Structure formats: structure tokens, C-alpha cells
Image 1 (cartoon, one colour):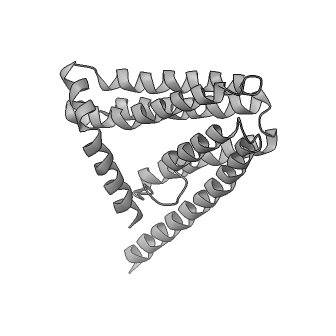
Image 2 (cartoon, one colour):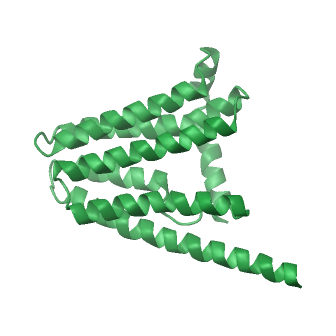
Length: 208
């Protein structure tokens, strides 16, 4: 059910972004270039988040670059499929740069002093664990895509909303970190339980 929901969301996104993807394809822009853009805009977002504590207006620029990073991250796979340039190397680099960019943003927010170190570190750890559990389960034949409710897209949306509010309500970013930390860890537990049940059922089926 969850994987079908996520697949439907991806299909809807690709339908709405089809024109942009087609333009990139016609210009001959390679998927890795889009992946690089996603990473660069994530670093730019991190830089503005770091400045946010002393210049609250920087949060609006941080949001713009964060949204661009999320968009490019979603588009690079679609461009690769459109150009028939999907590869294991591309998928590997996309995943690595995705996590590096996300980590840079959380580290910048923590380093700026805008949130407590505890909740910032908790949110970062929980976010990375959501992806780690999925990627660790996939080689075992367990598909966790769409399982849980605090994947990258949901975390990004929550952070964007909180960042827009923060210049007016300083606690908004801290609250978003708490929500991300708790809900992402629940997603980790949810995925672990799902994977355990799937692997146990498979083992029982083999024994019978």
C-alpha cells in the first residue's frame, strides 16, 4: 500500500514536471549535472541557514535553495529515465550526495545555534537512519520505499514551513527539529518491524 502511494506520488510529480524534464533533455543536460545542482543548492541552503541566527531574512533564501535542491533531487532520476541513462553509478552518487546535502543543512542549523544541539543531532541521526534502514533492507529483497511517514520529502516540507515561520516565531525551527527527530525515529522503528516481519515470513515459507 505504502509503496503504491509513493509510486503514485512520483508519477504525479513527473507529470507536472514533464515540460521541465523535456527541456533539460533537449538541452542535453546529463542526469549527473542535475544531481550536482541538487547538491550545490543544498550547500547554498546550508550557508543561509547558518546565517539565519544573526540575519533572520536569510531563512527565506535558505528555503528557496532547499526547495530547489529537493526539486533537482527529484528530477535527476526522471531525466535519467527520459534519456535512458539510468545506471548503478548514478543511483549510488545520487544517494550519497543527497545525504551529504541533507547533513550539511542540519549541521549548519545546529552550528548556528538556532536549535538545541540535542534535538538537532537527534533529527539528523533519525533522518539518516530512515534511509539507512531502507538501503540495508533492499539487498535482502525487502522494499521499504514508502513505508513510514517521514521520508525525505516530508522532512523537507516540514523544514520549509518552519523556516518560513522562524523569522516571526523563533521557536518554529526548534519545534520542527523535535517533530522530525521523533517522527523519523518512529519511521525507523516502523521500517524495522516491517522488515523483520517480511524476513521471518520468508524464512517460515522456506521451512514449510
